[in-house]
Image 1 (cartoon, rainbow, N blue to C red):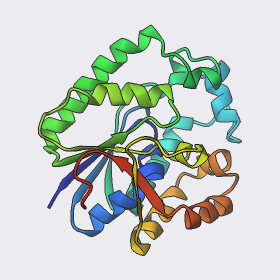
Image 2 (tube, rainbow, N blue to C red):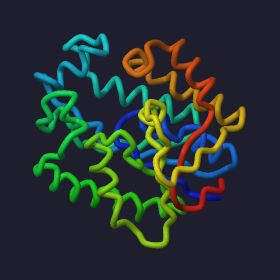
Image 3 (cartoon, rainbow, N blue to C red):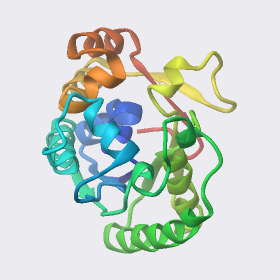
Length: 233
């Protein structure tokens, strides 16, 4: 039995990008944990942070991150994974003021967050003793994805690390990133991934247009891309 750890920036990244592969691990009897880094709450969000909630059709009174954590618990259950949430704040709560800034130069104030996140990941490594780790390749260049990858860079030597091709950014890119191997999902893994993706109800309209459109896209995009590590599951 493998102990599989997937380190996800946001509450959906691991499932969107590698959910089928993680489901296959679980189907094969592996122990799968998804650690999501940026799940913390800010009371009374303002500005761009609030806009990120409102543009999902959610009122300011809704506890957005609590809603998203609940969705993630259901999504992880759908692929046979355990969920673990860290209380770090997403970029809109760290001074990134608009959508464009999320894909631009990172703020110097992110450096302490990388260090704190590195320590939190190391603690979970010690607890879980993973035999394989998955994380973001950073296709799309989202600042939060880069923070997570940097925090993963100095973890336990000897543990294979596989970087996933970040989805849906990968689907929107004209070219496959260098070194990425895209592998087809078998039917049970693809079905489990779809069930899991559909649990993120607050994100489906924003990311795909609708739940129906998400199902249609995933019925055609039945692959996941990876770089590095031992890709055998």
